[in-house]
Structures are given as structure tokens and as C-alpha cells.
Length: 69
Image 1 (tube, rainbow, N blue to C red):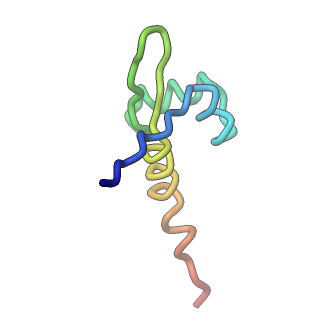
Image 2: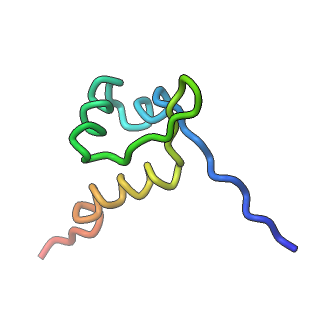
């Protein structure tokens, strides 16, 4: 029997460091609904690694698939 490992959780500081943005910028993106909303656990908020990776892929998909003509 195989079990699925739990998703890796990223704190706000982790997400900001990964994207090279400030906490205020991240909060603005969440408020504008251009970034996935966090899940609150107590005083902290978290995102899953998959949610952040999916957002990066969606945002940069056209750039990654670009080929010169």
C-alpha cells in the first residue's frame, strides 16, 4: 500500500523569496486575485508548492513555449 506524501507547505516568506517579491506585493496579488489565496493556520498563512508552481507555469507558459520563427 502506497501513501501520498503530504503537500509541501510554503510560508509567506518562502513564497516571497522564491518569487523575489516583497510581502506587500504578494498581498496585493492575492487581493487582486492574480495569485492563489493562502490557507490560514493560526496566525500564519501557507501555500502549497503545487499551487505556486502551477501559478508560475501559467504565468510563464507562453514564454517557455516560445520558439523563433
